Length: 403
Image (cartoon, rainbow, N blue to C red; front, side, top):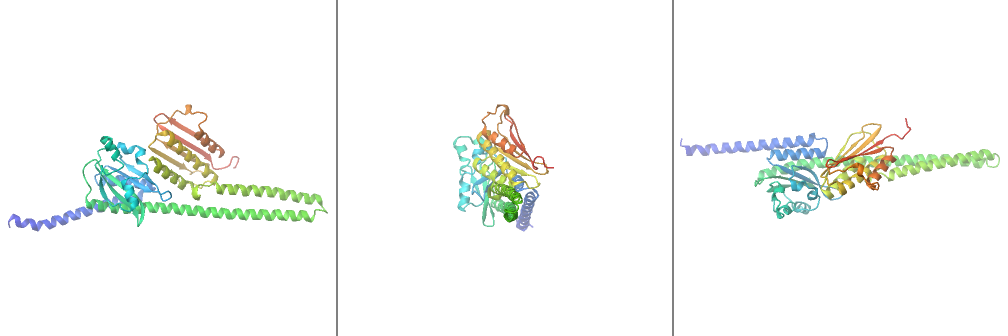
């Protein structure tokens, strides 16, 4: 049979084999992404692993994910992978609007290739002639993240080449984006469940306070009634009853005041400390571009007063990072695994300072020390020039003198 007659007979087979190879590769990629999303301890680690997997499996180099904070409506850079020097500067990765974010908010962002010139976040580097600071990026692909119809964020991936992603690759990335959307929404639902459980617990405490206060008032009434009955016949006995009623009144009033203070000085929206720290971190990243990782160990619940003071310490530490550190990353770690103490540390990779030269009137550090001291604990500051700073608050979980 002539050669030109055999070629058409073999072409369909080769086409089918190519299609099967592509499908097999796509299934392998989806399986790897699923493993990355489901094996990580929290959503941040899941997104980090997934982004690294996407970059590797697609032969790309760089990626970053924007997430939309459901509470503030701000975008924040949740994770990044191999950013070029220009985008490593936090000021260029704050949640301010860019062309992708603008299209996403308008509901018009679809999976597509975006040239470097079109990218409003990288365009200033081109105009300034700092092309080398972009790491050679030529295109980045932007893929919106949704859970059903709920907008969640944007995944951007790029490589230092002129290569555009094909339609099939963009479709595959859309499927991966759906997986990421499910993982993000699942994590947020878990946070919401914890918040509701916290609200229920606070309602239970409020009921207990009411019951305790009612019992105290009943006892006070009985003492006063007995005193009135003996006011003329046994004045000394009546006096004793009134003194008891007065002592119980003062005790009940103090208990009620302390309970109300504990409830009112809780964290924003009644959140547990771990969730409040994550919200604080997202807002800080959206405003500054400095990524903040929050790690919380499983442990016992903390008293409301302890949670409130530790939250304020973290808040003040991030304020110092914003004002002085010139950092690009911050890590907040909360450990409550022991019955004796809680440990909160805030570490940044900024330029650091010499702790011996802290001015006496440095109100930020002074306020943090006072908050730790009010809880019977201590604050430790570790810093070196060029090595960053670590603030560590260690507070006891039992009042002094309790056995």
